[in-house]
Image 1 (cartoon, rainbow, N blue to C red):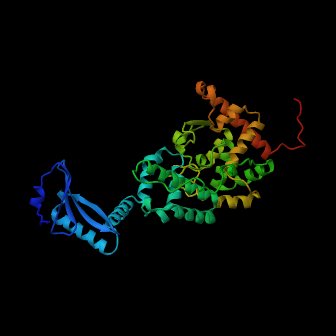
Image 2: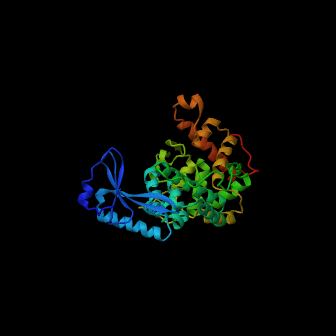
Image 3: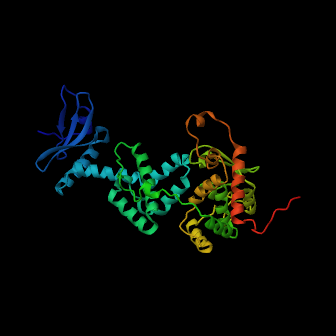
Length: 394
């Protein structure tokens, strides 16, 4: 027959050769489990849907009164028709999810991994604008695949499929990173969720000579945005490399792109042509603003999509994006007779194979000649010599 237990009697229970359970007359279903090793814990025994089940409550150090309360709560849950063990599991899962909100995990990821990413600022903008308002306060383990798909649908309708894939990429990175640090989390993202195939995104667009002339002449009077476009064409730089160009990367006619901002993770020195330096000279250096191309004198130039639409209308061109300037730059270099290796180095591409491993020459002079040849070709296209000019012998 069960006896009324006390804290003292629980403490005095001695282990035997086999595991045993000592019932408590003061609480229905409550047991003290005594292991042969001497470890003791509280548990509650109950029958749910005909099956005898044991729910562990905790070590005896929590006290008999607390154990009786937990056992009473378990029996109340059982009386409502629910399984106390399942209720405890769900409560623990919800507690864990609340402690690990998506925003907290994302901010931890950006703090630890963001410093290594060239696209950290872009990822942060996507999170704040398109992810946090929906998933920020949610526990990361409560976010379901169907909810992610619906969010991507909404983004695709409002911002296009490429933007939706950008958000998917950020979610995948953060959730995959969290999975490597969690015992239980399984990312809900699977293959096949992308909206645009990589092969569909590949572009071969370059500006025609007629388009280049229209773009250049319009850009000459289009302020900071126009200066950025001309600079990208004359350097072959990636959009973000130019957009977020800080004054501190410019010195003595050279542009030293830091490794943290370079896609390939290496420092790149670009010797600027005279024409590119003249564009930089047009940009006012405003105290407190670290960026060369700024629309407000405080931050890097923004609203590029809106600016591009206005520019297209003003220039009478369309169907091209800023990255097409980089491809146009490379094609113009070939037309100007620039050796392929030198042109590739100007764009910041790595030279592979044995040459890339053993050739440590910086090629600064060769790159400068390439950039000057490019600038001269652009000048001839934009301002062609008059047909009626005849050279006279001296």
